Picture (cartoon, rainbow, N blue to C red):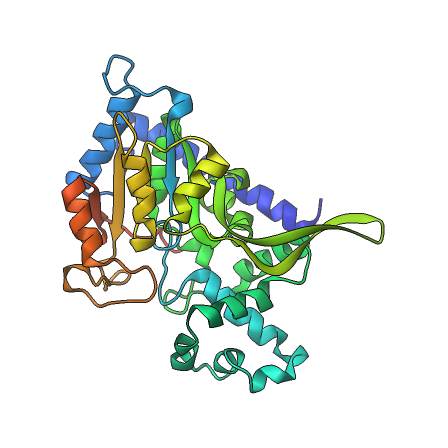
Length: 341
């Protein structure tokens, strides 16, 4: 077993004991200590009680207790940019010496010049070019090693901590609480599945087989007598917006009874979840705490954003359909775990 796998195994064990301790404490005390008393916390507790009580008319068999979570902006920050975009920009800079043409060709020039305005002007087409250049042309094992190394070294520009240390403490408690009540928790994200899988078990307690995300095409090859999967510069599946219900159906095979998101990209996942019968819980994290994290919308008059947009139409739909909107400012007593020593 190599050093990287040993580190991952030790991290997974640490997370197991953290979640186990949380579950034991929660059984005797408060399972969601970082949530303030209010409608959001009450909704979670009442829902779990209803679907796990065999005498309740809302009881759901354990095998059908599926909960899906978006990642960026739901389980960890999506500002000042998506974490995977930060990774892609770092990779472009690292690979630039091998590509002198990037100094004059957009969108690569914008990255090398730190010109965020020009980068934004390149639009979705430009971002796809960056992802293809930074994520493809290697085996899946090589990509995992690169991603794992980046997670170990990269720091968030505002919080100066590893991205993997910035999981939202209230959501970690929620994940643990659901699993303690026989839920199976899945991540369903627009992010790249192979970018997330190296860290999800250690950070969230979600094993790689329970992570659904966007993918690029891979191809089976034999190199030097060894079978490998090569990552190709072609989009395979985008797990965002209308793609999320498709991904859930394709890779999970059961409709969730609970779904958690934070942006317009999660609307269809919550709609799909709510369209099922019986008790349902749909929740959206609303970033309205500029002091402890970030505040953006443009719902409720907050600043607009290109990352994790929460439009007023989504807020209106949530109110109309009874989805629970979690205010980071009001509903969470803490955002992150304490800074590691």
